[in-house]
Length: 572
Ligand code: ADA
Image (cartoon, rainbow, N blue to C red; front, top):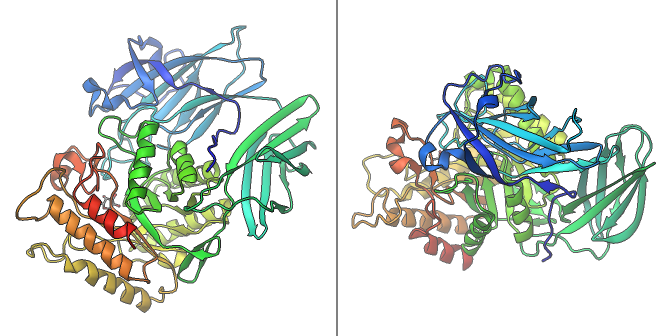
């Protein structure tokens, strides 16, 4: 296995200690463009904060909702163009450069870039201020709401970088594996010019004798670059390669490096095939969440999370329920985890579907997520709209629209959404993979019955029959959520709901069922780690204010079920 960094260019990380001020919960953000009177101008930056980090995990701001001001400085060199790249934050942000509003960001967890305007002073030092707000406001940020079953953290919780650029530069490079024998790739390069420029390609640092010319559209396609002798990517052998594209246009020289894996993914009848071989997916749903850091997970934690999942037999993780940290995706590439990535969503209904602003933003997030993460071989499917009300006829148009957008942005990967409405779902025919969230024996059918574990097998049988009746048996099936809650340390002679024993028996039952069934292609247990959720009276079904269905707790301490699942899933 070779280790690479997926950063495409020489960039300057702005992560570190920034100035910080808490502005409270009454700042009026309706006119963030008022540069001189902008709320941060009198902020008085009296504190320090880490970026990446969440402000509402600081002791005195735990649980607070309001506006925070962040400030740092960065040096601009002689380069004609500069971009700031933010990998993700929550929930809403306004970006100011040298005091002037430059960008307003409304999509939690989405990566975004901001072009740095030319400086009007001779100083090369630029001041970057970001107002970050974590209040729920369906007009300002309709993509995240307080009824979602995961905590909406505030802060710049993923890296920020400054990327200097030449005047003529590469804006994107996409690599698609088009054949396996010999491995062959298609390269699509976008540049910010429509005059002819020359491109040159290196793979793993080796000259592959391929050059290309960008035509007037700004995009060049090499026609099938064969790479005989280059290793394929798979979970068992996650071999990564690099492609470096160099561009020469007059005095302008640019270089852009992407990492990629040689692999194909396709749906054939009820099978999902990686490199033409059928997959059986097993793993977890994972929230980016930690007791101390919220979603600002240290890199070490990301590595440990993947290690914990793999040790227990996983080859698959569903990044529930939002675009993932790019560093986590890099690790999945390097460590051989297959990924389902999805845009943010949690049980959206007709109110959302009637809101044009919501529809626009969710479509944008879907496209931006795919564009940012296209080259990760670990991602094998795109999802959206977790548990939307797909039993309503109005939902069909939403799924149709997102399916079209997704397939247009990436024709190479299958699409899915996790439904909890089966058998009343009206949209399953629209996607490539059927994914069902079910909780038999937890949110049990028979509320009087103690330890109703037999509901698990019964439900799986009913799903198979139901899919056949609806003419959907010929599509791959994933049980995309199933699980039971356990409070870490709660071992009880009665072994009922919330005990570690019930969770262990429950997950043992579902894993045994899965191992015995050829007709379920994938299983993603709910969930990997306990995560913070509602603090209000909604928490009555969420003891401690946590969703406790993790197989490890919010500090990654394994519960009793972990060793059983590990035994069942590594000895098959
Ligand atoms: C849903 C949902 C998850 C979580 C889970 C649960 O299926 O998709 O986010 O809320 O239920 O724990 O009940």
